[in-house]
Image (cartoon, rainbow, N blue to C red):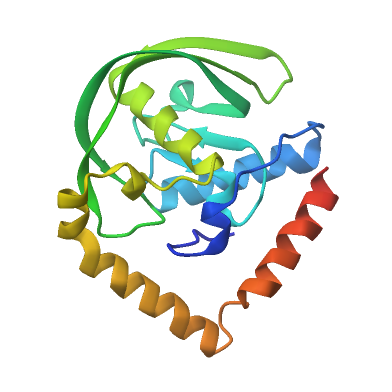
Length: 193
């Protein structure tokens, strides 16, 4: 399992709901936490590791020893948003991009836990920002799409470099073609659906 970088097509893909919680899913979640911690992340959406599943993991502290701050959200939904706040964000799929992003200051949301129970939370500040960022991923929205055109100009060279790297890797066969990626997504949906 590895972090997929912009502009990999699955990052633009709206993920599908999970219908079954089983040991295979629990193993996947454990691996996602390992990848998140190994890359110094605080959240990780399933499509960032190539899976078209409506699932993300998070630990807003980023500290693997702080297990009580680990959360798994299956089929998450934001129920209510309040206020706005701007703060700096980065993303594992957009390395070297750190920018100010405007988001809701607080949110009420729900998702299914790994044990199948429905969880509901009302968070504000950093945890709310992480949830919104990861939920955007599940909807096929990268955080750079939330930037003003002026701010986007400041990171355009980084994005161009990431596009060039991705296209080069496709030409060299290190990354499948877009057609092959679409086929893989369809096969994964069938496997998990």
